[in-house]
Image (cartoon, rainbow, N blue to C red; front, side, top):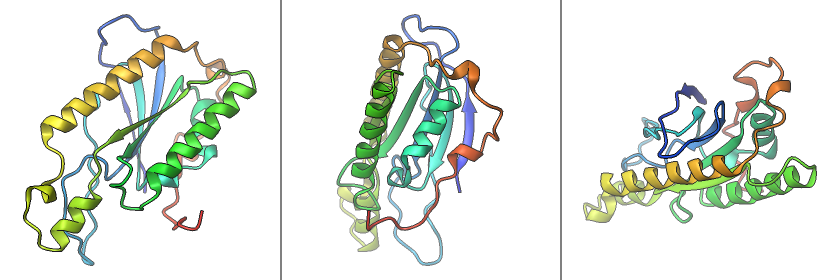
Length: 201
């Protein structure tokens, strides 16, 4: 199930064009602490406070590897100036190839937008540490520091880097020409990300 939340803009250090909108697809495992695997419960999703420099719609997904090109295109059609994908670090993804799939699909959609004349650069892929290794270590009763995952200081530094990248990209982009033409579709409709196993992709 996806959690969809709209967040107000936090003023950036430098003027951004008014009215810009970011849609962010955020992996539910990218910034949480490690949890020992259990058949009795699933890890609780954790969404950090990104303090986006523009108004944002946040969509929590089980893995960014589940995103398909149509999800990214629908966000752009709905008026987003920038679509940001926040994935786990490659090599620390619970679904092994999820972050790599997200990268390939983001590059594909960005090329498509450029080829049809809407300009490239509207898709931005960012990373937070992830928690797959930490979950595995705790499941094996490994109490070493590696099992604790990234520190809060590291996560805070990564969040600042993401905010800076988003602000810079928004300054460089022309407004989304489709924003005024966005239809009144259901807010949840474009963002239904299935939790099916796509390991054969």
